[in-house]
Image 1 (cartoon, helix red, strand yellow):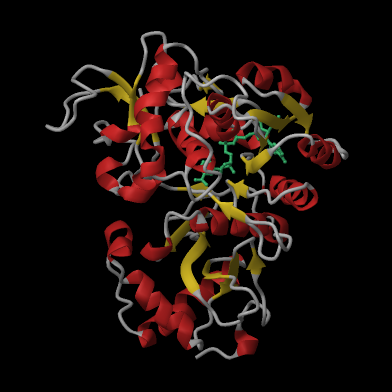
Image 2 (tube, helix red, strand yellow; image 1 turned 45 degrees about the vertical axis):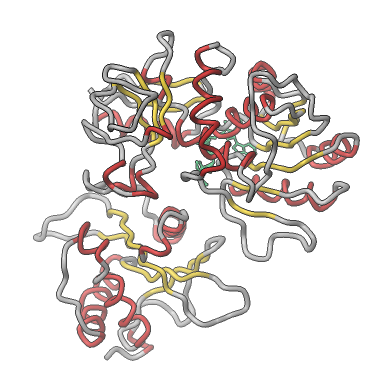
Length: 438
Ligand SMILES: NC(=O)c1ccc[n+]([C@@H]2O[C@H](COP(=O)([O-])OP(=O)(O)OC[C@H]3O[C@@H](n4cnc5c(N)ncnc54)[C@H](OP(=O)(O)O)[C@@H]3O)[C@@H](O)[C@H]2O)c1
């Protein structure tokens, strides 16, 4: 057993993210050893990573002592335990592991470490793995000078696949809305519901209720911009657990509800769909973006657009909302920093404004009296009719715009993915990167 002083990380070391605490493994800690046995013997872990010899806490403790601590000593990083932050409760609630691993010569090794994670099945599908990986990579960059990392994806890993478009090969016996040779876009829902409906493979079994015919004027690359962001925006706005707005329809007159909604970060893919959906539900839409995107967002239906980079944005929006009947705020932007202004607005504006976010809520950040929840873009009965009726009608009648515009990478196949990431890293605005399969 290793003593505290032999451990390469100081006592109490942890990497903190909004919902998670990432800590080093200790061979002498019984909870750590028992958790490793539990995690590495789940069906999920065995399917994706194979069965290990770690079947007892003693074996896990030896593994931590010999392998994990060695990685810490050589690379100054390695495999860490991921635990939920639970208020003032200091008891450890481990839910998974996140690791940054780099082999050394003469063993097989790459020039940069690779990032990996494993999460207990009951905690998967909530964005914890991505949050932990992001937190670890950020720490490794600032504290350890790690400027590059690989992310390897097992082609059988259903959790890495969501948006698809293509041609129907055949349909199930109860499917009436589609037939062979139809062109469709679909939400593969692989992250939540299983490999049999995951995307990123030559033939995908898509659920009919989360598929939509593509009109002739649309390309596959254009169809592929919708599924996840359309589903997420629909949940936030129409699911009875979230903003519960009246459902969108092509017959609804603009602003006929007499109510407004604030969508924050509308130049995101989720935001552009949220604008169009909220307008089709008869709401007045207040939006935020960089000034370069104001005109485009107005074209999509935003009534007023505020510059979120302005120091006075929150005050201006609070004043504007005061003159309208605001039903809620939807934070649709891809930045954690965009949650705080939404909470501030809900806190300062009149009424009890519900805030729905696409990104996690930082512990202790929600002001007293404000209701806030994070949304997940998964399957739910509340949004089925929006997929089945509203989206196809709106696309075929050209009353719903393809947004964001697809930015198609020239290099097709897996080789194009790196180019896509390079562009994403520099930052995209009002665009969705699309890589064609072949
Ligand atoms: N919970 C879920 O189920 C779920 C599902 C899908 C996506 N998401 C999350 O939803 C977010 C949006 O995803 P996306 O793919 O739609 O994003 P995206 O297209 O990558 O968003 C990029 C846009 O965000 C805007 N933006 C950046 N920082 C902002 C800020 N502080 N305030 C306002 N706007 C800001 C920028 O607008 P300007 O160019 O105008 O500056 C930029 O154009 C991501 O965090 C994603 O992880 C969650």
